[in-house]
Image 1 (tube, helix red, strand yellow):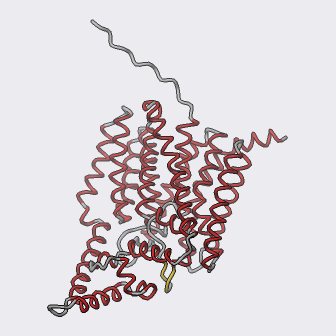
Image 2 (cartoon, one colour; image 1 turned 60 degrees about the vertical axis):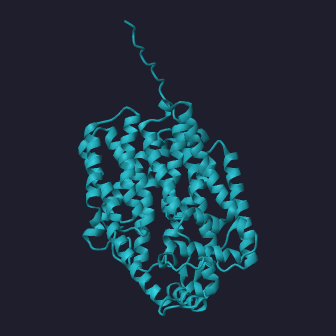
Image 3 (cartoon, rainbow, N blue to C red; image 1 turned 135 degrees about the vertical axis):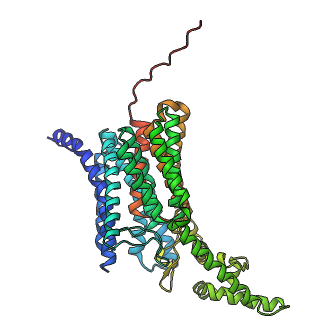
Length: 477
């Protein structure tokens, strides 16, 4: 009886994987609308954690290598105990919110373990993953089109109104997700040699990245196109027709860069910074032959004018010291750098244990503004400390090691079109994690990273490759 249940469950694994993948954009859309309708995020948060707990338990029970899961859970427990102790020494403000944030970070490795278990049990799960990623791409595309037609789309940059993110909340996360989906969708259309589908997918994928309006999204267009062409060259699988399509799309994007949302938003920002810089210089040098004390007072006024919250929180002079007394307004007002400086100064107020296990997220809030950093690796360090950052880097580095080892061992065997395609997504994922906070700590994006890591493990460690035929040697005349 138990063997029969196990067999049926094993046969159902591809459908379960497909369902879990397709569920992700639907949860994102639901989250967008519950937020738009001021209903809060309790529902979607509960659903995501239900999926996390359910799939985590499912993977553990299904696996024949439970020791690996136990080691992973032990690492989670050590990090959690250390983090709770560090936060308690400073004084907890919101334990539930903090634990929720902890779960968001550990979701990625746990999901990766579960997907690897499913791939190990049933190799057909790999095709289910491919189908699920393609389905998600078209769900996201359809949602974007409907949101634009109905006038309910959200802008990537709310202040300027530039960029189009549709029914999704975070532009950076969407950029990271599309960086994984677009190469896969194009590669599968290429594998089927379906030129109309390839052209349609190119327009839909690169069009979304173009309209998203972030600099990283614009870069992703060229990384995907050039990356796929290089993969086809290295695998001796190049087609001139498909290559011309990618080059044409790249040329079109490059030719229209000055009317792109990315350029328009950046140009508006630079103009605003130039005006603020002139105002700051006027504040500092309102009179000629200023004494050092008068120049200092003018500089203090600039900091208090352009960065009032942090001046109130830490004191103007301390803030100036943290910025090395710079008078460059673009540095003083840069949101990304502001948040890093805030967290660095905040960490100095915490006990030494916080440097190893992190701080509470609510401590990063001041006057209803959250200074959570806009970079995933910095974010993991400030929230989970040096221990959390080392564990995260080590986990990702393991898959980098698998890739390098496979390529060094037998490049032609392991560097297949599929491996190259997912390799493009992995590189873009790491770039997104380094440049933004939209990957490692966002459950909607980190889910795709889990899938990506599981696929890497499958292609290197689990997939059975057909024996390669020896190359025919040329006969001497």
